[in-house]
Length: 305
Image (tube, rainbow, N blue to C red; front, side):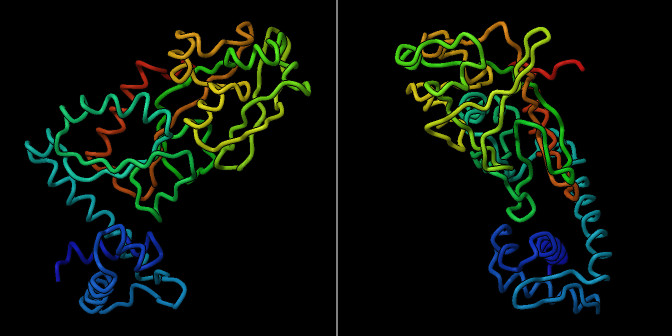
């Protein structure tokens, strides 16, 4: 029995709550993972897991051992990366999930420079705006806009995205240009709805001008749950959009989007990198987070508060 493999398998079963899911994330067969955990229990002469047909639960002894295993695995990772070559060249597979517009417009175009610095890191990038179960799916980190609602996660604020309101010329030619944000509540105007993953519903947008403050909900003919589709709907003239500057600027420059209500202000959207609290922050994850923070310092730095 390889004790490292056995400890790693045990930790993943605890985190995933399933031998099958643990096997998938470790790229092993379920039989192999089961045998490794059984061999570990036999060596320790302790029952680590309670198995039922529906779920796997950690025993009291297993919970204590799990915490020690996490520290041991972290120490082993630190020992490897303390070597001069490993310290300068982090390596291994990194699983991340990022919003689709951020991936296509900022992160992916900048990856050649990242790989020039870190050629031995392999990134598996999920591109979505959905809620990701980082433990269940064995994801190392997610990049997300908006305030985080899951207080169990560790997170670093890496940017503040300035927001604006925009519409395509075709929409304005057809419906007319709204003068006041409240005009968007009128029956003939439409917004493009964005379905936030945590609620599954569009949310009102807060806007301020001097002492006047209001929340605009608007009416939509189309609501989507993906940032690229949201932008495409606005460009097609399907309604008014609320967009971060990094998404809108090129289209404004080309005349494909028109800014609205420029004398009104909107709070910037915070951007976070979040990761599970019980995971060791490996060197490869650390350098990825720093790289994202460096990029956002150029595109949308964290505002002083």
